[in-house]
Amino acid sequence: MRRTLLLSGFLLSLLIPISGITEDEDTPAPNGDACRAEIDKALAKELRIYRTVLFGRKRAVDTPIGEVRYDKDGGAFYKTAANKWISSTEEYDYTYSNYDMDRNAEVDSVPVDQGGADLSPDALPRRGILDTKRTMTSELIPYLTQAFRAFNCRVDMVCNRVEQSTDQAGGTESKELSIRVSGCIHVDTEEWNSIPACHFAGYEGGSYQDVANTLPYCQQVSGGLIQRENDLLKMLVEYDAAYRSLLQFAGVFDEFLQEFRWTITGSIRTAASVIGSLGRIPCFVSSCDEYPPSSYSIDTY
Image (tube, helix red, strand yellow):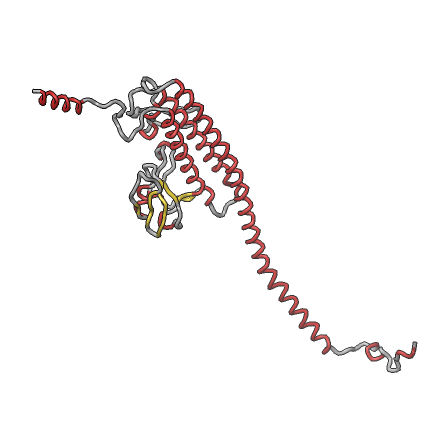
């Protein structure tokens, strides 16, 4: 009888959920550190998308060894051989070929039909704004400005997503959100659902301190990111303008030298041949025979 009771108690303990285990083991419980980590991850992805718009994206087969790319799950992959990409994190222990890297590369968090960038495999290679040829830098300014403004909107949208997530309750299950930022497009996609690690409302392990630290953190980090990218964009425009001006000057000067070389060389050769022929011209002036006089001598003086 005692053995039967012990066995029944053991089986009953297996059915009772142990406290501290969440519904989804892959999703961390709501807390300040996990929420800030998700903020950094979201901002880093928007930064990569923004720089892809500026510099473009080549096919994986055309990239040099040492290139780093991210897949759709956020894993970083490093190209070590002509057709081999290895994971740089412990969570991903598999490799990609060039074809797999193109097919699994991260895409924009905003769909193309809602204003996002087309980074699908069929759109590769994608030429960046700064890759535009046969144009002046001043003609690229409107596109660069619009790209930076869109990046600014994305950063504000991330903080708006975090703010709405802190008001959500319900554990680790992501909930649908409607992102609304003044002056920016409205986004209603699964990619912009709530962040479970930031669900502080109604969670016993959460605190007002987590909320108070999370929202200013997003604003502070996003503000520093925008300021840094603004300075980098100024430097890029200055470099691009100098580089394109140098190419234009080099092209014009090279064409000038080609034309100048044949013109000057031909003129010098013609002048030399004419000067050499002057000795054969007969002299019909009387002074040619009278000067210098035959009696001329240095002793005369």
